[in-house]
Image (tube, rainbow, N blue to C red):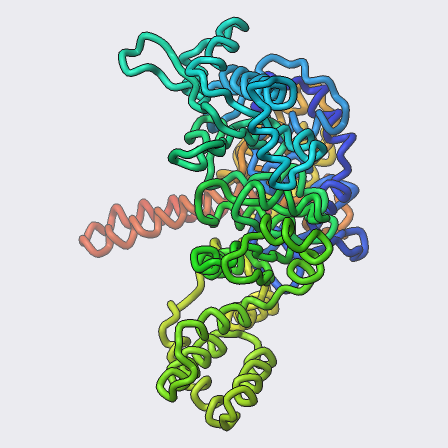
Length: 622
């Protein structure tokens, strides 16, 4: 089958253990609608739920974006895994042994064996550095520094913080003794080749070490903080086959449980902020690693939380970073708030100075809205004691408020401005109205729905979606309807599939339908019983999986019998004849225009013969 080295028994066991409703329900709030479960699609922006789960068939399908499949496919899509990765993760959760050959291979990256080797080397290196920090005289200065910063031994153990000694080749010798390929270790970011390529040295030296984990808790990189003087103060692992800083977030694997439970995430700028905040009670804190927040980060967070609280440093750089992060998170459909810190203070310093309770009470639990933060940020750039400064700020503030989609929000903030500066509310509203008209004119003709995650917050999109969902679905040609209904029966009954195989074979007119039929014949030939979810797992083709899921979502209350089957087959088999007749009619017209009436008459005879064949086929039955 297309899934290669993963045994049939593993696929079946994974699908049996992972109920489709429970699997999807961890990510999507589902409500019962008859025999279906419905919710807002996690893969595209929508306000009215078009995402549907069919428990009895073990599949999902979205009528809005067309994504569909079984529980494995859902995990592939939502977690951005390959098929083997999704099966492996789900098998581990179910306690199914990972024994098949190539179980760790990944379809879109370099060799799976190298990946596993590098992960093993990283995890071993973390244990070494942690041991050196906690149990040797070499690590004492680093340990004392951490404790002076208020980091407890419990935090050190939880986050496996370590220490890389100043010697050039401590880790290189350690890994070489354990027979690791040092060239691969360089490729994985742990070592650096000497300039003359005569050997390897440690990438990290005399640094406090912070392991970086993947989403599933594997060590994939490291970050080192210089203990003494020197540059760079922080050094991260380079981009490798394991680590991509634009996609990974520090502490995500620990924070995910709390994020999903509370649908809220707190974003920090640094590792120490995350670690200290964790001790203060922030179990849903994450941080980007040596890079600004990216769309990939936001997409990952948006699948696990609805609300983001930015808790960046209180200095100018931190506030500027927060301002840039807000629209990125909003594009991912998240409600964004900002935790305000005193000027120049970072979360770590605030906790150390004022304590955990004050940090939670004064910052995390009482953030300001994204709009309020934008207004405060704009305000500091104007001299409000001067008339010109007030005017410029008011104009900028009105522009910020005008961009809000909600009329209620616009009214709220305009009233605040009116009271604060003793300005006429009507004049502010007029300015906001004119600015909003300008913004509407500057918008492109339509939003890029593929990159939007705002869940209906955009009024224009909401109107378009309402029109789209209220309009009737496109009417398919009769032969396409026949093919889909026939395939739906074939997917649920192997005897019907065998009959169709004998009478029709793969002569479906729609390419995807023909491919599905061919795969289905092979599936049953291998002795499988009808099982839609299991069959979809065998396809390993995104388009075919969506098509199969779409077909199985059709409601058809008409009793199926041999006469209806014959009607469907006849409808399908007529299409090539109709196409041939159309081609002959075009040829006849060309012959008439060229004056070749004899040829035109011959073609007309062929057309009549084909039409008689079609008419005679109408009453044919098996």
